[in-house]
Image (cartoon, rainbow, N blue to C red):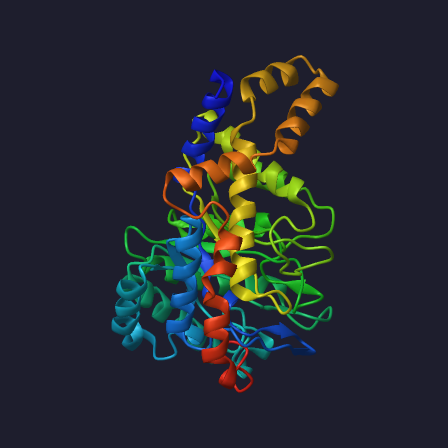
Length: 397
């Protein structure tokens, strides 16, 4: 191996050794669209099955030591479920990750949860937030990831300003109950299910709410939660510069919040986002970013697509890590547009798969995780074991 190749591999290996990406429990369950769903025999219907699947992904990729949990879907009995979850963590070698409250599923949330005009319903939603924080404490989970469906569909039907005030109060109270090591990650979404106004519609609103809540609150960027053609890496750069970036929910989309496999539509965008993060790190900016996947597939095999997503994330992260940023900075300073863009594009087009394969082999991981998954027979085995009851399971069991 030439010196330059050896140096590149060392840089890639260092990036991969530090890159961890959290996978979602709901990504292993049967899900669909508002019109229906196509069940899969191998889909998980219990939290133990989800831990088993997450363990398989981590065994294959080496980068997914935690699994995000959804409170109502995974811990329906609240804190009473904590001992059983600890048992599953020990059994499968995967820890609980971010805790996701459910503020959109109850029928009483028809007109909102933390922003509902009813003080009684707001109190109920607030209690769920506090319960979720206690669950996170009991599981040793740092991040509470907050997404709400709150909003309205028609002009004049709600007071936007009053709802801002109610939300600020709720987030301040939530922040006051955090343990010193915990964070509140506030997600935004421009529309759906609300179509006139959404209470947390963009990164600016999320950032302002995080500042109001307190120093342990940050912004969570879902790559599918933006208008078409929006410059997400510019948003990331602003959040990095202002110290407000807390984490990502990674996925891809063609039209809106499609939950497509990461990089399946626009891998260049993911590369551009990772470049901004690597660039900020090179400049000495302090950051603590949680990389989380938020995908739930109706057609692809659950475990296969999760492995595929993690491999894609690793490859794009390495591509961005290998950028010659000193040379790029020189070209940017001199406004050498063509050379700067070609250097940037060249990093994206670099085939890093031999490096990621060599990294896996050096660490005792399968060189080709997807092939190893197929050869293991894991999916076929669990499909046989679970298939007889899949059709009777709730979408979000």
